[in-house]
Length: 402
Ligand code: PMP
Ligand code: GLU
Image 1 (cartoon, helix red, strand yellow):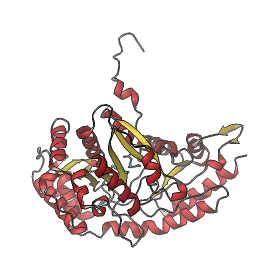
Image 2: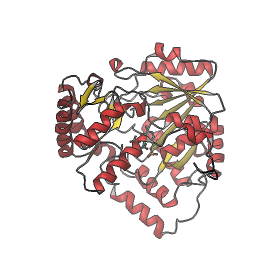
Image 3: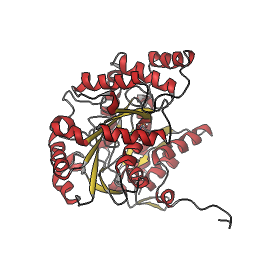
């Protein structure tokens, strides 16, 4: 570092760039340079945004919706979110209790900025989505990682949770279906969380971004349904990125108590002002139009999941929980740790994911990024041909280790 190079803020040096986006960028760059890469890294549907949604975005531009909007989002979109919650779940929210943000990710950022003080602890069940701990840290809080176990199908065990509760616990984040495991939280786990939250006055942040993507006919248990009192202590995070294949449009939304949404709006007014106006009109078309699109994706994903999970479990020494939601598998490869390729030992998930990329040309995300080093995440939101070819390469790569 030269003498005149400006030093960075401590908060930046504490965190790393998003590993999911980093692997995706690397895979894309290798592919652009001509390498035959199969990309199972980033989590985004391999579907195009529905046509009527794109048309609404284009029309918004033609209609002149190209200026700043209200900070929490256009009223029509907030009304549409209110209606979705009412129709889909029977939950009652007012438009003032809704914030539209620049993607679900920024909604989460706003939530943590609104409620965390330095030293506050936020419980994060692991495996967790990569961005939760850094977002808590950027807000000055302390992420407290609560392990969930493969043998429990990655459901939260209330006895384990209880061990991580302290006087500084302020909030817990739940994500069901989960990224990266695809597991759903059971009603009994949510019940235990609600009891602790009510007793200790915690906020529950429920990241429901994959709620439309489940592979079971059973209703998805939700914290708001286990105890009516939880509405006062819950912020819901959702968005259209996954459910309507709109990752690039950057529209998410949150719902919660008036004072928390108001605080989040204050932060949004001083940071992004509002999400992109045309994208909000596109999201409006998504939430008010036909609601069968997520089901179309689920029907396409189901055979891919079945293929990937059964083939992974058939590999000697590999175990893979069958995901009941989202579009990820999270197999355990730890029995391969300690083996070598051409004299280089593979001792952790980063080394194994690097090996898959270098030798098998398969891009995946090391489990350590999700707080679980025994595992590797693969997204199966890609074609069956790619999955089959990828599976062959993974098997060959594992067989080449000694
Ligand atoms: N939560 C989870 C669990 C996710 O996987 C993602 C990733 N897309 C998000 C939130 C944020 O989604 P987006 O910002 O694309 O709306
Ligand atoms: N959520 C997706 C994933 O986990 C997109 C990348 C990101 O936002 O980190 O791959």
